[in-house]
Image (cartoon, rainbow, N blue to C red; front, side):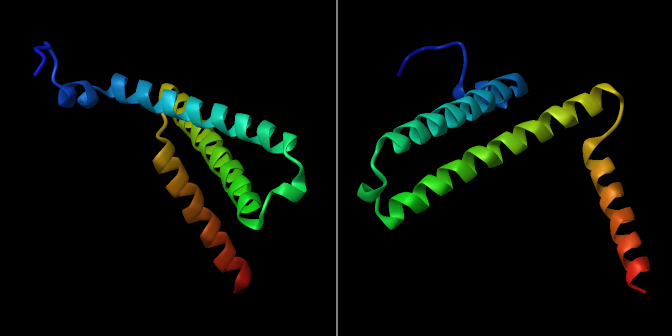
Length: 106
């Protein structure tokens, strides 16, 4: 066992470390999704089976989901800087939205 001044648990309990790992993970996903899309274009379509096509769609969806989550994190960070809470604003928005929908349906 190597002697280190840090324990792995302590490293990942640090919010900055977790944030850095998450950002690297998101960057890796985006980069690999782009690489896969480029490689897929170089392969003749008749060589891809149905599962290959389905998998390529899934990869694109995963990359899109991560992009949306990244956007939401950036919005939340900006709102936090402005003294607002993203989660509370989101709940309030949906509460009002559904109330308007119910009122309209009546």
